Image (tube, rainbow, N blue to C red; front, side):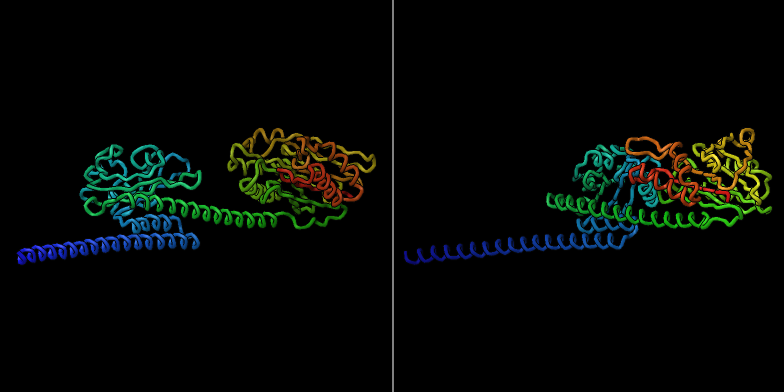
Length: 481
């Protein structure tokens, strides 16, 4: 009996030892599994931090857009341990998603035409060329639908997805996909997708959450990169505009010509960086002086280019033409073919005889010149017909644009100006108007051309409440002494 009990006790002890050993083994396996999972999480976090660091470095370096796109796709692939990836971004019109980077091993995420599918079976490069060049309309195919729905998805079997049509089923293979829309604030940017063979990588719920974070971080980085790019482009444009403005200022007279019997002053004030107005003095072969003032319709770069063209055309034509009207006719014929239909130039070209005995001008649709007569103390308007340059190719222009001859006595003062003066608006929308110009000219003409120009500019600024107008201002004043 004692022997039997001893045997039973020994069996119990053996069983207990075995259970303890098994429990320890299970415990060790669980610890090992947890350690592996912890290590996997640590590795995943390391890959994520490395990726985010690389994105930040790329933004600070202001890498090219193509380099940024590649970094986003390849970095996301590395973080998620995927074999393929693609980035599609919304085009400027907001209608299509354009492939910006498509890795070589990323399966098609769009419908593939039969012709391309057939070529792809023997030539992978044909498929890649199609995928890298083929935009996807918003709302269509897998990529377009994910963008429209703005929802991150895991697709366990790509070939079974009903949003992929066409003949690319065999190209999709047995593939699992994570795909999500990229957005920053209210701005929708595009779609990021990662692919892997089902037998090599199975995305789980934890991968889904990590991928969602990757998409958010990539969208944030991409939005910042775009902002940096926009700022850099804006800075470059501003630099180019400043350079163009300096060149334009060089083309304007830096000082008035010295002509016996006359005092002359001129000034141009651009409303923006570049001006659509200009004035010029041209010394002619017979000793007479040509004076021009012009205003190109519109503003900005296009208007500035036309002013430079007009200046060159006028200087070229003035030497070989007998009269101001003939000069403007030649300018019109030179410029008409190169001026857009919605643009034109108003201008005046005046020739003052070398001895001051007379003046001849032609007016191409410009504001009418004003003369303050010293003897009467009144302002006189010089009326002459004329059509703006660039509206007609020549026949009508030359029929209506005529020369006007007039005289000036000692002390008389001639004013040429652009519509930035008379059309300046106050806070109530009232125009400065011609009557105020008459009053300022009559009051300040006795003090000389510079006083007239400074006084008119001061009056316009006061009238507008210190707010610079939306149009250029150009003034030329000529006084006979």
